[in-house]
Structure formats: structure tokens, C-alpha cells
Image (cartoon, rainbow, N blue to C red; front, side, top):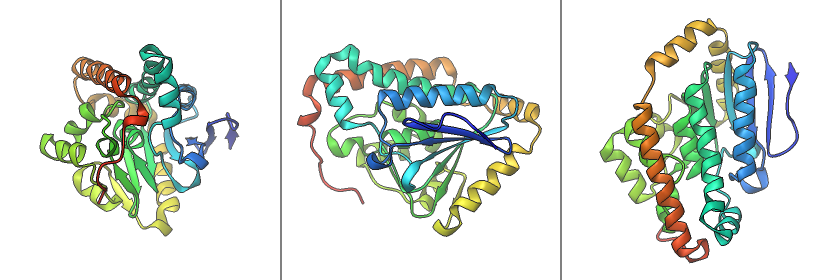
Length: 258
């Protein structure tokens, strides 16, 4: 085992050819700040560049994956101006976009809450493993917000336009088992089996030929990179304009999630 950066809001280490990244703001359900996004990108770059690493798994501390963007930080940046607000979304986008370009598979291990930006980080991962009782949703609409981390662009490719719009416009909450049925995750585990299930899966993944894995990942690809980039540009511009025009304090929860 080799330890990496284990202070701060994102921690990482290497164990048996697996790179482990942990979002480490458990008291805030691992909500994303600019610094979280930057450290996540840095950890992904370091681990994927290490020849000793054959797979990467991203988890959240405190039995939650990620509750989305940090509301206090969004409001602070909005009060400074649109360009400051963009820094958060730009940093998160760089981290999410990086996942598709690294050679090794990146697995999101999702338990507890995965809402808004946490749901979008799930979508950016190569493979998603979930706990049966995970709470998964693009909850932006429940607060009069719009996605800014990729949901409008990645989600239709994963589940189709009909289901994507249903999820984005309703804010409906999904369990891990439903996420698997919709194609948002590969496998779901009972809560008691989650840790061992994730460990067994990523250990097996890391034992595969690294070069072959890299080639398969590249061949499978995904959405056309250019069209995805253009769509993400549009989404980022829209979310910054939306928040700037009203202010976070004006957004309120509307209705309830199922």
C-alpha cells in the first residue's frame, strides 16, 4: 500500500494496483467546492499517470457519495460576479471531463446521497457501482436551479431523451437498484455487502491487462467529444447566467422528491 495526499478535502492512496480517491467533506455530505474540484482533478491526474495504478475508484467519506455543489460557496462566488462563479463550474467540469481521457477505468462507488453534482460525477464515471439503498437524483429542479455539471449533456446518452427529461424535470429520487435498471449503474449491492462488493470488483478490474483495458475504453468512447464539449459549454453558460440573474437565496425548494 502506498499513501498519497491524505489531508484536505480530497484524499488519495494506492492499494494493490487500485487508486482510491475519497471526497472528504463528510460534515457537508462531500459537497463540491472549487477546491474539492481542483483536488479531484489533481488526484485523477496523479493516479492515472502512475504505472502502478490499473483502476481508480472514487468514493465519498461518511457513507455519502456527494450532495452536489456547496450552496454557501455558490452564493459567495455569485456575489463577486459571473466570472468568479464560473471558476467553480469550470473546475468541476475539468475533473469530470478528465475521467474520459485517462487510460485506466474510473469507478464511482456510490452509497448514501448522490444528488445534483454528485449525480453528475456518477454520470462522468466509466463504471458505477451502487448500494441498493443509495439516494440518487438530479435535484436541481427542486430548488428552481438548472444542472451545471453535465446532466443535460451526459444523461440522455445514458438513459435516452425520455427518461433523461423525466429525471431532470421531476427531480425524482432513485434507489441503487432502479439506477441499475435504467443503465445509470452497472451493479447494485445490499448495504452490508457494498464495501466487499466494490473491493472485489475493482480488484478484478485492476488485474486485467492495463494496455488492453486502455484500448477497450478508448474504443468504446461515448458521445462525440466535440459535440459534448459544445453542449457542456452551453450548459455552463446557462447555469452561470441563471444563478447570476436571481441569486441562490431566491431559489427555494419546490415540492418534494419521491
